[in-house]
Length: 302
Image (cartoon, rainbow, N blue to C red):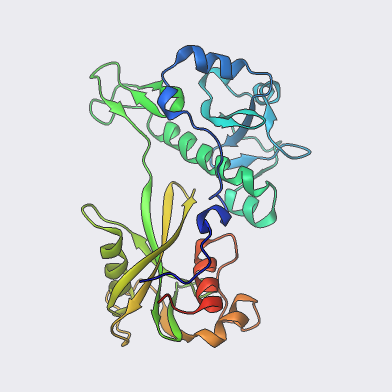
């Protein structure tokens, strides 16, 4: 399949998808370097209370002093990477009704952070949540310790090493010439791309074909990757694809969706603009929106 869509880094244009930090993954065991980065006067932090981002009055990121004043343990902060303005860390604090907090979904929708910081915020959210839920060894149950600047937890009892995980999800638009396949979950006010978790031992292409078939009964052949989006709800990676339909009859197998139907490409612009209720699509912070919009504007890949 030859892509005729604009040759851009589509992933970097999505919410949570732009992250220019130098993660220094090969130097995370360098204690002297990490100490230097923590003491850097330009160091800043993304602060979370549970799964909620703590908004800084006036915007931007917290300084070390500000983060510590909120109760952050700076020595346990997770190193996210170095940016042009200095190192950035992720910090966890206790929840408090006195703080202004928001979900990362609402932060993206409402523009509380610039797009350049949404990626590091998603990175911090995933890592800090992993630390909260993996304090104890999955092998022996002993309490684990922090390693590699926050990208590892070690068990001092049995020697097991634990690393954060990302759960891959395929999200795709099946195309039949001048129409595409979209579905709606019960209670949702829009139609969207079909999606589902990848399974062990499965390729991206196989997962795309399987999920489309299970949710709609439609068979697909060629699969084309388009873009990916870190999706911090809680730690997913959305892998966006287009798939060429080789059958068109809708006969869902898993009944996961309330409705699945074909939409004419000509009707999509009104849906994207919200002018064709109840046939709307997800908002522009989601990769589903951009998959649908790309097909609406450019047609099927050839």
